[in-house]
Length: 341
Image 1 (tube, one colour):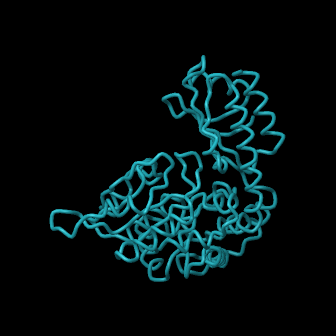
Image 2: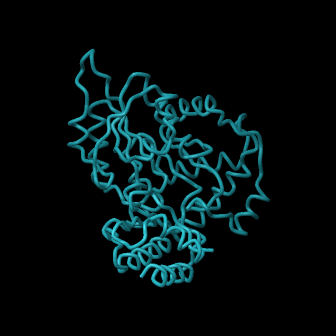
Image 3: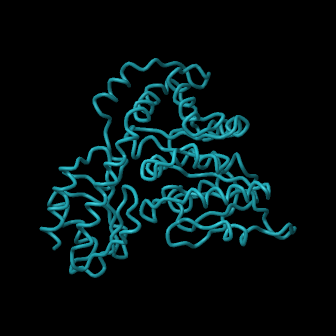
């Protein structure tokens, strides 16, 4: 079975399991877990931030960030296709009490001008704009990379206006691997950033939220409110440390495998891939012109032991990851050609 549904389906490697088994642990609620503390310190170093906080998921990290940055009744500017909008169960509304002002954009990367146009006036009738959220890489846009220069422009503009900026950097590791721009430069443009350990890096659980010491102190309280205080969490943090130390450089392989699959799909009659959007490890394909519907394609390929997702409306998604080798990608490409061509 070649599973291309998500880069979250990976299992710990033997080396990662060994690191987990040897993890030195303590009670993290008391701040006494050595592995958690090291993971937080190392991630903060990589991102150029003062401090970091281990959280159970990217969603927890994002809602903690939004809550720590805002007050109820304020407004957040973000892309209309953002993960925070679509896949986080309304958590920002439920816990932070904020409302969203969304920006339409074909690739998830709006400009500083579009931010400026959406800032509310200082008027008693309007919710004050207090936060901008960016996403890099952008999931629903197909793993596209937010240009670092535009992020820097947005960050500088927001600072002038007293507005904070948070980056949902679940796949920031992929952006850094694809461009050669270090994670710290992307993170320098924003006040806080969430990075995921359980996607491209292949750890079983967890994300890390980073920012200033003051911000992390606030976010830590929110994590507690969300039930995110874990005890001997070093067992999980050890996996994250192994992933950060050993799996970042190999992300380029995932990108190459995604390109191979995208080229294969794009050559099949009735299927179209916007190749300029295949920048990292995610491939979206429009199959509306194919003789089979997206659900029929999904079932047909599952019978050939290739799994991916249908998003409806004639769209499918394939994601490469740690467990997909070059041979797997080539085999999947062959089965796609044979079955759908």
